[in-house]
Image (tube, rainbow, N blue to C red; front, side, top):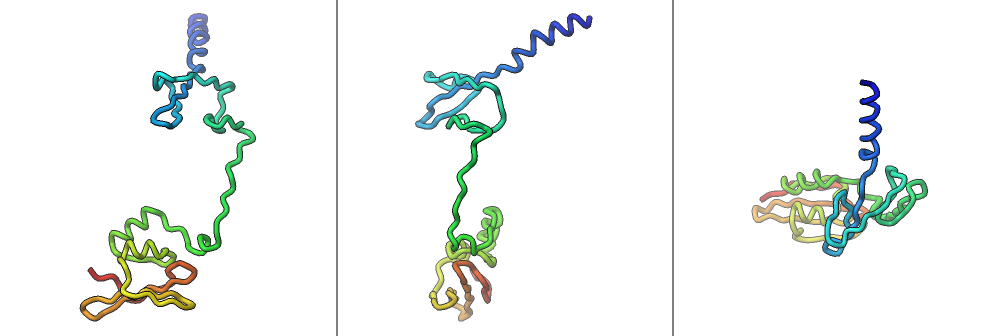
Length: 150
């Protein structure tokens, strides 16, 4: 019984470790697949199979290092706000410290007037006579008074 089990495992293991990778051009983009993905499918030999690296550029898994991104000073001033939180704030017509002018415009709309100086002030004047003000420092919301009205 043990001999049969070993024989079955020996015969099955090579087929489990071999996985074909195919490279195709689909709508102008290079696509990799585990099955032929078009008439121009080209089988790619990957030896040894490793985790990491980049198949499409041929870089080695051990030497590949992504390019270091340089950020401008203005981008460093505003704290990161996730896209999910930004959507929530926009839907509720709310703002938050650190938002950029484009984010405030999406949430509250175009301001009635803009005053510049050491601090930039956006004014929102409403038909009822009330107003809200948003203050920007270094391109980010630093403070506000009032609230958005529909």
